[in-house]
Length: 440
Image (cartoon, rainbow, N blue to C red; front, side):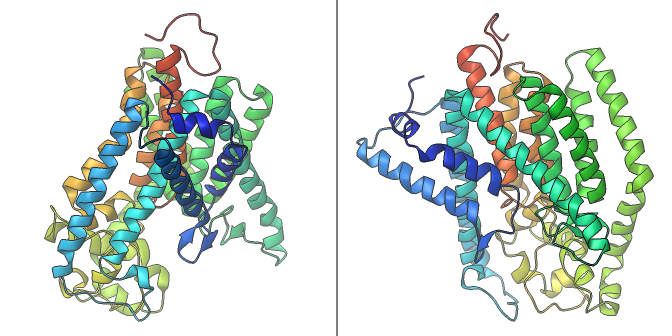
């Protein structure tokens, strides 16, 4: 397919590598924000503005790879329906917190969520296209992403002895590494993405084998020290999916064996079944317990409260949800809160796609999940190895394990998957491989 004129023009602009470097580094954290807007989202908005200017200058003409085009149309439809559901949600009686930023009020918060999604999707699709055109840019961005993840891990490990001495620079907290994040749980999910990208770099042959494997071992240690239940659940899910999707018996047995070993190791560190039972029990007794812990923000807000309130929202509005972003504005409604403690501040359920289902309804959430899986289906159609399809599976697994949709790194890893798929479709072989036989 002919290259888009916009892309041909941007190929020679010096700041394109600066853009890719910025994406690969800023995706490592959500702490860097201008107000409520992440720095990386600002980079994406600047990209959209530049691409629109070039589109106008080119006489409103553009040519994109077909998969990129249809994904763009699919996400555009999602945003339209989400906006209509946000407008319909104005029928509810809202319980506004004590202090509410202007962009977090009814309907405005839905628009803000849509703009965040547009930024991440635009970045993903643009990078997927240019990675498919030029594998050297894919290699560059994946290496920067991996090295940034390693830097965050080293930062966390250095913080460990400093915290013990009473000097905590932010990488270690409550016996858990958290890198460039505020908490160990979300950071553990990010480290899973670093491990998947690092393994792909090793298999592509884009980094010295001994070096990358030592670094992967280091990041495994970092991952263990995050004690991230979400991250450990994601790892188990990835091994299970690899076993399920393996194309031959040997690969399937290897995935099952390694997966069982990892699962056994994880259960020795954290009793995941017991943890999930505790969450279930706490949610069941949340109404009463929240009255006894009104000052404990880790109990009254976040995942614990969401585990009790979100199912009630889904049960009440399974088809249309309560409006994207409206959880914090409606969680105090008696039909959801019951006799639980009345919170005074805005809140987020921190449950990933489960929380999204309460806000968007089950049909639209399933549609969103399908959109996220399209790069995976495309790579499976090209019959690439599992270590490539893992790049495409990471986003769905991360969001199902609790990562919010405005977390940027899953979209970046999906861009890697798209780039590999487009390059393979055009050239008949994976990036970094000599073209000997076409991919069947």
